[in-house]
Amino acid sequence: MHKAEYIECPHCKHIHDNYDDYLDVGDLGGNFEMHCESCKEQLKVDFYSVFWFETKKK
Image 1 (tube, one colour):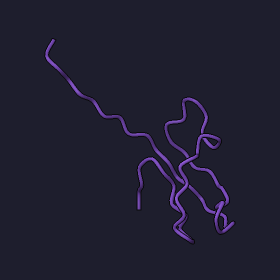
Image 2 (cartoon, helix red, strand yellow):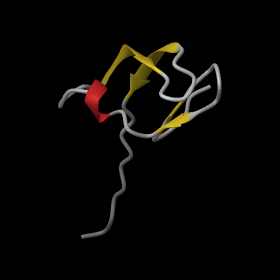
Image 3 (tube, one colour):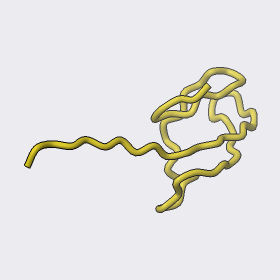
């Protein structure tokens, strides 16, 4: 299941909200592997960017 703003460990459901070390400036999508800080299991993370646009009268 896709989550916004955090990574949930599929093994123990621990919430990871510090993923900046895994992303580079300009990354719009990709994947990486990381270890859960709670259960220490390895997990694969796929990510992509979504853009939201809002318009207003000038």
